[in-house]
Image 1: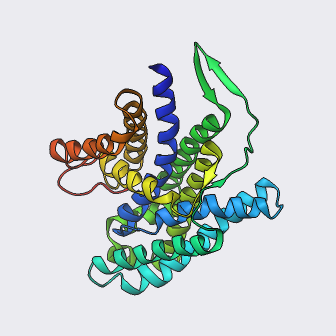
Image 2: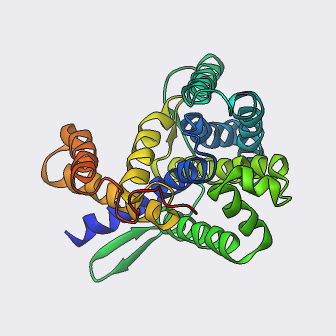
Length: 289
């Protein structure tokens, strides 16, 4: 039982990174960015492609993160910026178009089959009281929580963080106060892309496989984690991601793999009924970063 809890938390760490990316888009820009699953795929697939090309793994991972950041800037320029004053559905649908485009570009480039990802982290296990923690799992968990903690510090204690929170509260007021919104918004997209791409890299490191559609299931669970934790709450996204990971692993252990999605999205439905604002949300207004 304790082993399953550990496995669930380690899986949840990957969902945390995706949920945080969605939270940044929703909490600051009020923009449900459906290109995020595509950025997750870019992180894993580009790393795999660059490794096959002979690059050392640090450069391959860096290249994947840079590629995801470049795509995120395209999404900001061609999806969010040109339609932010339109109906809310317009940027949502256009970002969904980026997801379809990215998946199909990967599909025609490498094919639809899952590709074997090399084991980059030495095969060692940490054993504590009969509980086994894999090296890749441990790296994923520590890195995910460390990144979120660092982002939280930036948002709360730096000038950039104060400007971002001002935009989250009221964009028009932020402009009146002299905040360069046009400069900061692309940075928000880049931060979200870094979190998402690293999630894709860590997923590949843990499960040793990548595919053009690897981001879809993780993306939906990232949205579920964001809602469960409370839309707009950074640490709510952490709690939601870990909870979704636990629910998934426990479902596989006790009910079978066939009912995983029923368990995860059933949990989401129960949360929406009992506490619509999520674990860390504040009714009636959405909590801001």
